[in-house]
Length: 45
Image 1 (spheres, helix red, strand yellow):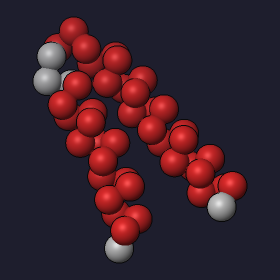
Image 2 (cartoon, one colour):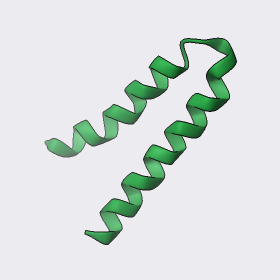
Image 3 (cartoon, rainbow, N blue to C red):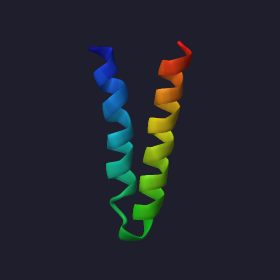
Image 4 (cartoon, rainbow, N blue to C red):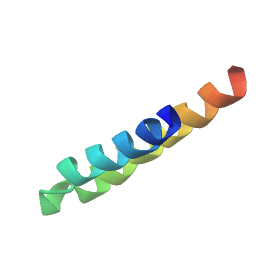
């Protein structure tokens, strides 16, 4: 379903950002922001 795309896109972003070893922490932080915004979006709808 369309929900799968919402879950996968943050993970795809993590992989792209995580390509550089020095950006691993940034990738994790950005990934958490995506998850948080996704959860908040689900709650408000």
